[in-house]
Length: 282
Image (cartoon, rainbow, N blue to C red):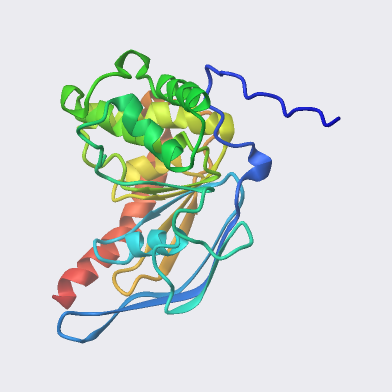
């Protein structure tokens, strides 16, 4: 007689991913073109090659319009590359894959659902049983600091709390690879720092693979292991910086770290060249 599978236990801690399951992201010689409304061919990305190791946190910065979000959408399987190839965990990426989590700058919550209802939605779509769904939703909302707001509607939450609900909605499916498209950009400065602290606390326990798009150099240095700077359009990898500051990182203490300011200055010097060159092209 077969032994029944063990029941999943309720957990007060979020279990996103064992680091051994984290996906490697491999981008090789990717080119991307679009056709403008005037039927002109526009190149967004040029010869992008990038390897992200399992459990690594990589941030991508660059001028507006350089193809950062396009690159993220390619890794997420939302677009097909015009040229080159992309592998996530050894396979071509596909939209909606269970191992991928995508977090946008705007929370995109459903106003008629509570915080718990919004977080439960992807589990409902996947057919997760109600009891397990409720346990995972509560564990995830607790992990992002919203245990007392599970029955609140989006209109009753601050912008920072809404974005934490969106973060929980992404994490509840336990993706091994996280794609973050300027997820904290719409928040005020104080709330952004709080979100950095909360996200790092979750990530440093589980070390999922992360690709972060941001315009904020301070955010990139605070969160990432490496920072990739793209050139102006068509986006190419111009330079890579390794953020050689120890973990775990205390967000509030980084401003006193000389290495933080040195990295910021060096990144800004590279980025400023591209911004100025972009102005000359106008």
